[in-house]
Image 1: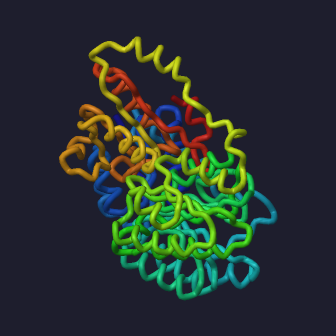
Image 2 (image 1 turned 90 degrees about the horizontal axis):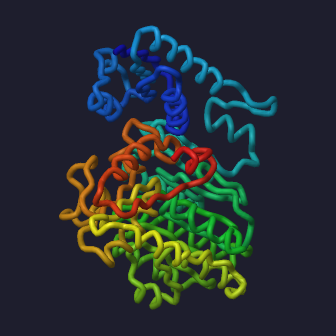
Image 3 (image 1 turned 135 degrees about the vertical axis):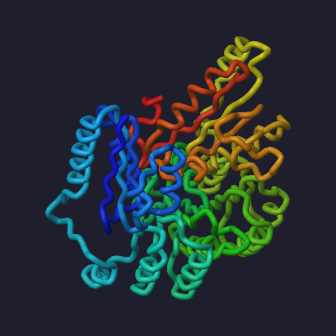
Length: 447
């Protein structure tokens, strides 16, 4: 077995590009394993854990690009590196004569004065600095980068709030602004429903369901997953609600989040109570009584949130195809299960989708385990071994450190699917399939 390492000094690629490049590199002929990542300590630890750490990797800096290939022979390694260099060359090709590259945000803002939004995906160490530059240039910001400290996030959001700007993120992967889907957003029709979401895949699902039910979106404002934490205090969620409440095109507002901090949920619902427009609240694990007391509409699932939103926007519920479950088929399949097949295993790309499925399962079963369980008694100790009813968020850092997200490269989920399928105690394997710009082109086909 041969392992070859190349360190490209002071060479930076954003996380989205590296995910895509790593996926393609692992598909090259003869490659057993390929890792393309920045030289961060976290990525070095991943390489150590999979047996690919080498002395030259130890010396790499966080600003250096690491390329590691494992193949059967030296010749296959060399062939793989030639293929990887071709991938980098294609990555650098300009797609059209109208495309102009700028070295800094300042120069871009001066050259394009009509621009009002910046999408930032850089190394987490530099992300806050670049986001602040964009805000200083009066640009709304969508910050895709993660590994930004909570202190930096609070500072950026407070500064944006003072300037009347949106600070979406860090770790914001989904937005629809002016009918343009950004990052992992989906192409949906324009309409009268606005969304503020602290959940990327949750907002994807709700926006697509709204489209499917005949409605459309004005704006989908992502906040980043930590916005409704105790520390951040919902700064972006509150500003997003205010913006949509004042937007003439928006007739209905939908709020989406994983379980928020209780004090922040209280603050958000207090603002909802003052809204002039109907609001649908879809907080996973949220309390219906508190939502109703705020004069809002409670939704337990994404389907319910989307349905309530389109009806509030004027659709006739009787004319909507609600995609009812095929109960006869479900009963037919269930009848074929043996008494031994009694467990559900959920393999999810989307954290919110995993959360929802897990909460629903917990209403019926006691022994529900997960890598994202809040109850420490039911948090998986060994990620590679399922227990009883297990729901895995395979897009969580537990699974993606140094690896492409399963929305982009589903190979890790395929391997886990095969593992669960061999378990004679498993009766149901539950999965999500996420479409969107930047996601795998055929997530169902590859399974």
